[in-house]
Amino acid sequence: MNYAKVNGLAHRLKLFKAKPSWQMFRQNYGAVFGAAVIIIIILLAIIGPWIAPYDPAQQFSNKSFQPPVWNIGGTFSHFLGTDDLGRDLFSRLLHGARLSLFLSAFIVFVSAIVGVLIGAFTAFLPPILRSIVMRIMDLMLSLPSLILAITVVAIIGPGITNAAYAVILVLIPQFVKITQNGISQELNKEYSMAAKLDGASQNRLLFKHLGPNIVPAIIVQITFSFSTALLDIAALGFLGLGAQPPIAEWGTMLAESRSYIQYAPWTMALPGLAIFLTILSINLLGDGLRDALDPQINQ
Amino acid sequence: MPNLLKAELIRKSYKVSNNPFKDRYLQVLQGVSFSINPGQTLAVVGESGSGKSTLARILVGAEKPDTGELLFNGHNVLADKKFAWYKSIRMIFQNPRSSFNPRLTIEQILAEPLINSKAFNRFEIQKKIRLALERVGLRAEYASRYPHTFSGGQRQRIAIARALMLNPKVIVADEPVSALDVSVQAQIINLLLDLQEELDLAYIFISHDLGLVQHFSDKVLVMHKGVQEEYGPVGEVFSQPQSKYTQKLLAASAGYKRAIEV
Image (cartoon, rainbow over all chains, first blue to last red; front, side):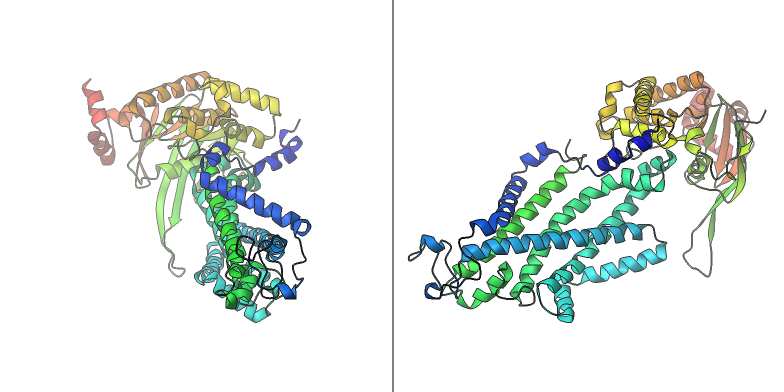
């Protein structure tokens, strides 16, 4: 019986099975808080259209600038208040969560796949070509991500889709660098040589031996990239380069209510708070994951 | 009857200059030759930078020499692209902390050569791992634990078990005990000696410790800056060193002097 063939699939599935220590994770209160908030926000985003009391674009012209329910003059029919055009803020925030989260997830998914593939490929290039690719990545990283994204959007034109392309491009270099560095470093370690001397093929070395040592770093990078993506999309929206009104998007909502901050502070505070809470939770979660995924720390 | 392993005039150099117009090479090995038979131990001694570890890597197939022949049972394995080094000539690394993948269990680590040989099913592999652990003096239950949960001596035992998984004929040990406590060193050396007797293994033992070499080996190869200074039976080389360098090396070793006085 051929062990390698019979168990090929089972083996392949086991390759990337990260083994986080839940005990370690549970003791990290920040990470648990982050995970809890993220789960709530994701659930709200998923069921948003069903629990939103109004259509996000529906305007109640006689009810503009209605304050939230806890302020004087607030009502339960618009319990987070309304904006300058009388649109229900709670409904807009829910739809914004949906847009921001799904868009960020898509952006990170694409840039992680592209970045990891480029990085893995680069790691096996001859040194000269490898340094050329890596210097191009350094060049992209040396520019602040938002400036680079703005440049890209300026070239291909504003809009939510183009903003997404720009952020995807901006996030790729980090993944390339992490993957390439990870593979190069792990290849130089003695256990890689030991695996080669155990007769492991190139593919087996990469997926079975190096992979599990690199994947945790990529998972952590995914969480940080996710928050960058969310923030950059919001920032592009705020600058008028991303989502265009009347789309309910957190950054665009911030921009629209900018002029009313003294008169109706909740119109700006609520989307800002949504962005802040989401990004804080993702970063806390990322920190917790980084510690929990390392078998040497978590014993 | 050919020797089990015979090296002939192995040379190796590394490119040390990045200037594409002017190649500079560092001669690491300048013609090393030796032979070894089953049950024998060849010690390779020399100061740091003398090319001992490069020789070890060439002997296990991790690197290719520039010129020279390596005959395994009379068969030139350097010319044979399909030679399965991992079934015949195995290595024990110096540092038991870095030579194991931190994310694999001992079972997965020991299974690696067996899986790559494609000759065993899952149950045979598990049984062989159990036997291998017991053979090096560890409990079979340890198989499910991770490398960092073991002490240095235990890890070196696991390294020996890994080297022996496919019943190789030659073991190349690159300073296998220099990273261990003195009390543990003796245990590992005794384990290696027992295994040699039991399995008729040939050892190529790279070491700094001349006292240990004298006690442990049959032949000795003295290296200095990539040059083979002296090669012969351990008694001859130690009692009547021919080369200046060997004499200096022996004089510098306190352990050796003590051994002579006793």
